[in-house]
Image 1 (cartoon, helix red, strand yellow):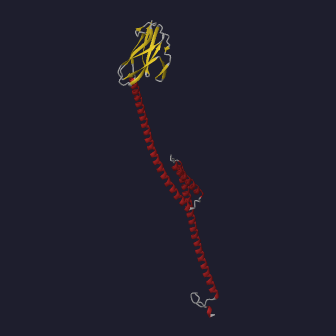
Image 2 (cartoon, one colour):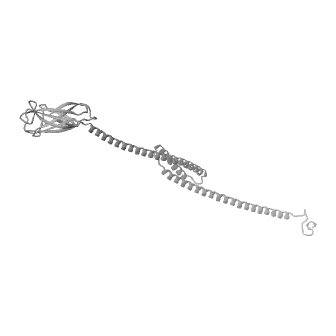
Length: 314
């Protein structure tokens, strides 16, 4: 009975707890630990949820950024396609290289479209390739500009050369025309001219007469005038005698000479040694019968007509 006595104040005396009291105390401690564990787990769960939410939001933001980067990269490549399409050159070799670079741009654009925006490493790789393609295009632009500048300079030089050639041709034509005119003047000036064509009738006694019944031949005399620039040496003078009926009178054997490319039949001729000084030439034409009327005589050299004369036979 004394064992169950409590000290003043109601506190049990150590060493005097009953089994029931000890069991209650253990249960109380277990509940307390469980509560603490639950609270800790709840806090950890909340923290982990926050971390997961942060990671998810951050990943989603990264994917959105990469999607924007992919779209920007796509737009830049499309712009680069347009810039390449505007490049052209007159150089065949350079055009082949441009076609090759255009094909690279098309292939890169297709690869970007087929790549997931979340593939960050690929997107960064494509950005580097785009930068390389842009650098190459700038090089080609510089090269084309240089070629165009050179072509413009060459075209100017060619145009200047053509202009100079045209001017030279014009000067040549003018000079040729002047030379031809001078040559023509010289040629005209070098032609031997005649004057004083005189036709008389000669009888059998070698006397002059105008009686047709007595005439045996016609004598035509003329002077070849002085010309210091005319060719010197032997030359032939031709006469063409036309009777009152206008028909050309010839010897038994018809003779032909050429004057300025034209062939003419002549009645009689004579060779003269011309040395630039005035010289008189007489040519005789004989016929078996002369009738009444006017006889006309034309005197020629191969260069042209020297003059004409006539005689009236009674």
